[in-house]
Length: 267
Image (cartoon, rainbow, N blue to C red; front, side, top):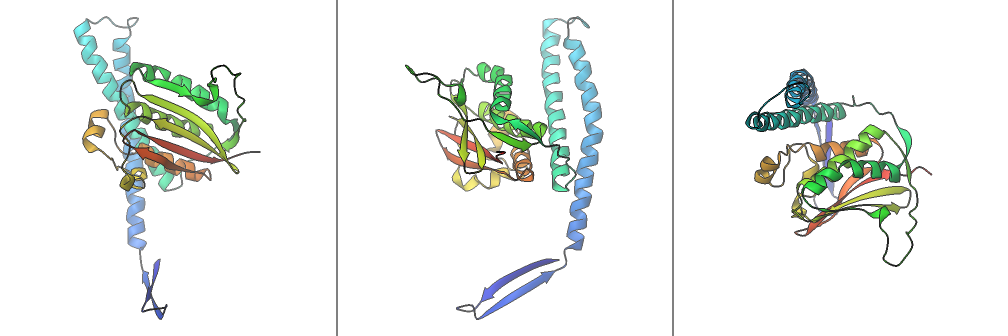
């Protein structure tokens, strides 16, 4: 049952309460989630097989192909990988929405974990010749290395990796060649805030809330060119909320954006 109350008249003279039976709507939502989950799972298997065989064709140890064929197969392999990620995102978002996503939280050192993710994505940043910065490692000129507080969080490592990797990859993907991506950590009361900043084209303030909705894309033409499906940020938001945190846009302009997952700190 959905219950909505609205005041009427002046100075709270009365109230209208509307009760609505939403049993059918909820059943349809469950059926839709089950369909997406089943379809994604079933389609992921053949896509993984296609990706595997294309990978074998590209491996000099298992196959010999000329350069023209290698170019074609490389593009097909990249498309298969993208399709696999899309199905995985659909599967994950359906699990989150109907509370089937399992969490195995552990106490992790956020600084070390972030550094590992940062280094793993460095090749992608280098391809675009970005100034790629991990703020805790920065050394002020003429000064000793500043000491950063160590933050711990009780969070599922795989899910946290998915959140941060998604945001850093977006910062790299939608940045201008030669731009800058910075990852920093800030403390706010009992929370640790991971600040991921870029110097891309930014996000319009009217879209700040919508951007975390499934399938919403700020610039559809740019997203199509980049391969965006509008699921990544929705998944990031849901995972953060499941761990008692959140994710929000701290600032955005035509000079870039700063998006921050906020996690409960473990003392």
